[in-house]
Image (cartoon, helix red, strand yellow):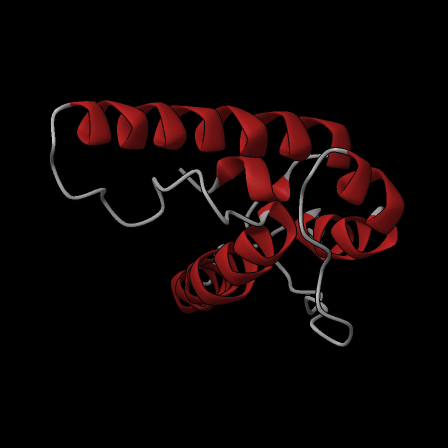
Length: 122
């Protein structure tokens, strides 16, 4: 679900942590069962900021772009354009460097900002 990428920072951060917690719980269970840990489920060495930047840049942004392109092709008039909050969310992960470090999370790579895009309404 990429929906939280277009929500306010506080909502996006909350859902990002929920998803990470679920993935890590799955990885913990896989380890307990002696299985290979699935991608994104390894708790050790996990870095929230870089993980989210990748998610926003390589999953969310292309998806929102394609949805916007599809919307334009449908020629449905819209009364407003929508800038997804994931632009702000990518920046927030960078600006929250000290907070993330205190929580044991990695720091966003400088220059890895998210572009602003037009997206469909909620």
